[in-house]
Image (cartoon, rainbow, N blue to C red; front, side, top):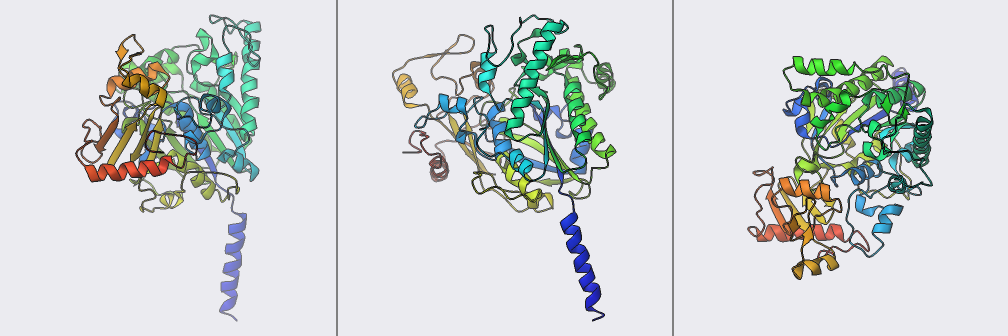
Amino acid sequence: MKTLLPLFLLFAVSFVNAETKKKPNVILIITDDQSWDSLRFMDGKVLTPRIDQMAREGLFLTDFNVTSTVCSPSRYSFLTGRYAGRCRGEKFMKEHPPGDQTQVENIGELEPDLWNFPKVLQKNGYKTGFVGKSHVIRHDWLTEHGPTKSAAMETYPQDADPRDPEVNAKMQRNHQKWCDEIKRYGFDFADGVYGANLKELKCDALNVHNLDWTVDKAINFLEESQGDPFFLYFSTTLHHGPAPWANKFSLEADPNMTGEGYVEEGFNVLPPRADVLRRNREAGLPDKAAYALWLDDGVGAILDKVAALGLDEETLIIFVPDHGSFRHGKATLYDYGMRIPMLMQWKGTIKRHTRYDGLLANIDLAPTLLDICGVTPPDDYAMDGLSFKPVLFGSKEPIRKAIFGELGHSRCIKTKEWKYIAVRYPTEVQKKIAAGKTFNGFQGEILERPYLTRNGHLGHYAAKVNPHYFATDQLFDMRTDPRENENLYGEFHDLTTELKGDLSEMLKQFKERPFAEFTQ
């Protein structure tokens, strides 16, 4: 009895601790158009000390991928755990009714009547927050807000002055509409919201990044959410271009110009913008590299606030871009677009300076976070992803053998060793190609085949830097040719047949979505 009593007490204490232990908080920091060379720890010629510190103090997922390489579909998959081609949003279904081949790009959006993982967390006691860029809801609002009166957004001239009280009131009301709408998709808190990119504000004076504004809103959420477990989706507009170094003008802009118009009181959450340029110059770097340090300051402010609130041992913090930069692989299925750095920091739980080299994808984040938070997804929540929770606790075992990718009229299968990409156009387009008809390029050039995306700007730059962009079939050895310069299609018959078969099996899961011979 004397022996059993201490064991019983130990068991009882352990049981109580397990029951009362607070569920972890989660902060997802997602950046825009970020290339590997805008991070110092990946040998970029920039200054990013706080992000580098995250890499040292946490877990670096070295082969993390997005399954679509433009903003909307990538973010859709992060938030839902589903491939973007499964989207049932109004805009997507209008463009692609059942039976049509999908052209996955910036028309994907969250469905109000389907699950996403923040909505599930909210139903299970989490306070959920959304700050920053959306581009995943109400595409109709984005396109309606033009020179004519919109049912959703109040309008003003493109050259309007946000300091004009009447104009500014319209901007504030428009912003509030975005915040209220975001809340319908599983968020208790929404502020500092951009409907999409800066240009969608339809005002020249507001076409500037304002990291101070969004970080201020994120800090407000953290201060309001200390009592409950929370999830924060922090989505910065940096480094969206057209080129990241062009964002230098944002550092020199009026810091009171925000996504909700002119905010007279300003913000005091980041170092002065002149100080960003000063530190960047003192590091021997050109001004065009200062955008990276500015973003780094924003990440650091969030990390510091978590620590100041005493929540760093209770909070998993994730840093990840939405896809690669247009200078390399955006709007393609090449690795410079798909493969992105993901960092995960959780003091006292994730070991310092660890890495995982296995294949993972953005569709895997939703099931992983639900798993970590101890939340069972509803029976009717359809997800394509796999939980990689064991990786956070040191497992090196492979989670995936392959990753499926979809972008425009291209699809791919990627393994650790190989990548096969298929480009197939819908029947009506293929008939035009076969008949010798030509297509107009973004700068007036004549093309034998159309771009993979509707967006000619994206197609132009993607084709410009990737010589195999239009090739019908592409095979790359990822071990010897990670830049995907040499197309080996036709040299490995058995391997290609196997990869094509794998792609066919994947595509047949997308009901009523043909893709040439792969789904016949």
